[in-house]
Length: 290
Image (tube, rainbow, N blue to C red; front, side):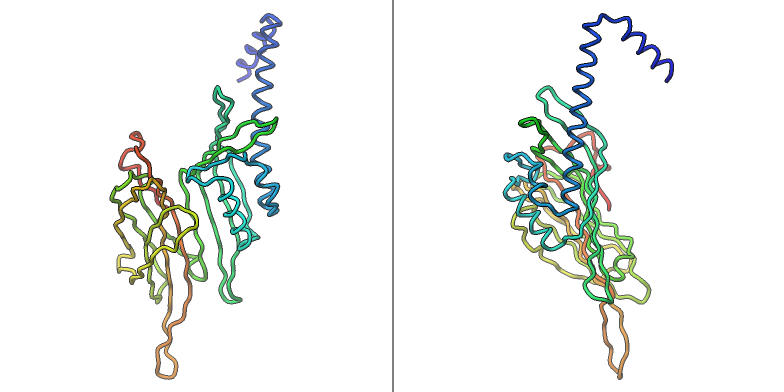
């Protein structure tokens, strides 16, 4: 490493001044762009954690449109609805990579996480968790870096209450499918001892307003695995696979059996519907499990 630094320094000293100045100018410009992109994304997190809607939306370009087809108007409505229902969500990001193309567009690969406590009664706590592997696209507009688009590669969100918070839930489905493709989604978890578990798996398109998925609850099989076959929509709309879980225990009181709810919750994963699946991913690697 030291040898590399010495060699680089020697090269700069020996290079013609005009050439060296060009190197420094490009290097500084590149570093300034990276700092500017990071500043915009970090500002988003700061404003989101403050629930500062106006400042948060100001980091987006007015012509913003994401990978699900939402423009800035629809996206703004989604943010308002979320913060009206959950104003204590804590957000964070981990930037993995930043690249720039010849048109000045910055492409940022990052991991987004969020979490919130969501108790519903004094006896039953709840927790909301979400993690997404995303790509953001930014451009410098009037001297400021703005988000022009983004897309989610992989996403899992869970909302669990009571004893369901302690479950090791495995919900799996293909990472990507083509329109009209038949695919299987599976749910696996081991319920607590002496607990009766029911569950359902449904799917719906990613759209606004979001529709309520049709749930068909079944007793969890003895092998603790529930599967369902789906056909991807032909509208090129991405989809959610939604697992719903209920946990109950039986107690005998006054010669009668009473069931009490001990836990319930939901887990959601994304299935992107694309015209052509990335061939390099391979069929075996085209399944995600969360």
